[in-house]
Length: 179
Image 1 (cartoon, helix red, strand yellow):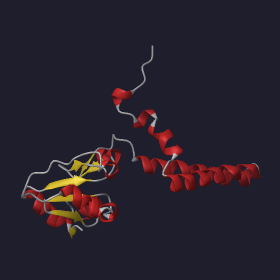
Image 2 (cartoon, one colour):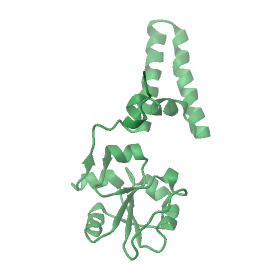
Image 3 (cartoon, helix red, strand yellow):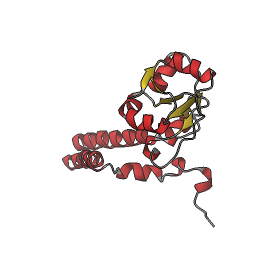
Image 4 (cartoon, rainbow, N blue to C red):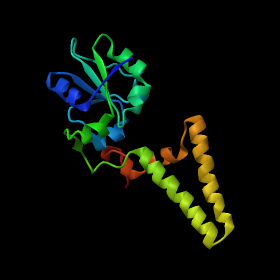
């Protein structure tokens, strides 16, 4: 298992040459990150080899600390022989400690937040329309709930796939060609 350190201790180690690794997804990292942190999402942990300077500590963080704590064993294996730590409370604790954060508001909201907003909006819409227009609209809320259960059971979210394909979530170079 990895030892936990405070954001202040992590900042001190960074100043001494440690490597900070952000295990969040690329869309989360692009919007808000600790300056200098490298991005190695947990979803790609087995696919990508992390090159770390020998003899230097490696610090892992996520948004709240839950992902890094939950995957500490995998992260320890990734760190290899390097001394490795988990930043307690992740990025949120880092910000509460008043440490620097790079924010790019031009980046879209994280995909899971977009899913939560869209799904929640559809449920509310279905309930409101069910009360005001016709009870058949309650089916919209039920359909969204069923979709969320399916996503949780299978790990496949159709709404996330749909939102990922939206123009605001595609890099500028991926825009469709029009004639």
